[in-house]
Length: 259
Image (cartoon, rainbow, N blue to C red):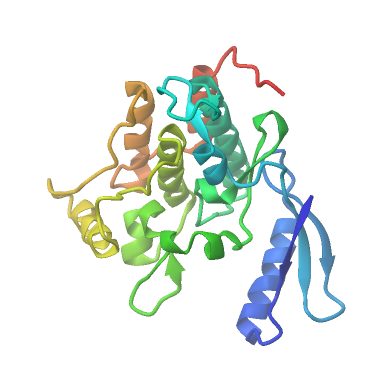
């Protein structure tokens, strides 16, 4: 299956250049946990590219359609996902991000909505912007700027506009939190968008009033400790994706996906 990403005919020159640059970059990515560009139409208008799409759709909806194996099922027809399966999926995301990190490629919008699920719980990271229409409530416009996924973003990205592989690490921990909560709620759901921005300033000033996402139910302390490492104020203190991947691999020994 593929999805077609099309550039609007009325797009500005800068947007067109961004689209062409995105096509060039994405077409060069080769990793089992990154979606592939399978075709490009650049000779006729509108410009478009064909991007791989997986059979089970995005991870956010996939999680919401299932229940955790340890939970008491309210819907007896709902399928379950084991803790091992959840960590298996998170490990694949870390692997794909490790590949992007090796290329100094910054994703900027890592979240379950931007990960696709295939047979055998194969996960591929995507980034083709289409999720913004489906998940419009996940994005917030700051002072006339572009819509931003502030609940997933590192403080330095929101306040300073600084995006690095270490800000992606922050977003990965929020994504891991989504996975272990089965995407049942938005990150910081108890806060308004304005309060999320205020909380970011508390993190910047290292104030005690800062709020971090809570430890999910049935989440081992060592996994939550990993999340907190990824949310360190100094990006230099956060782990690399290589380190995250190695850690999760060790926690996932012996798990075999059911196809």
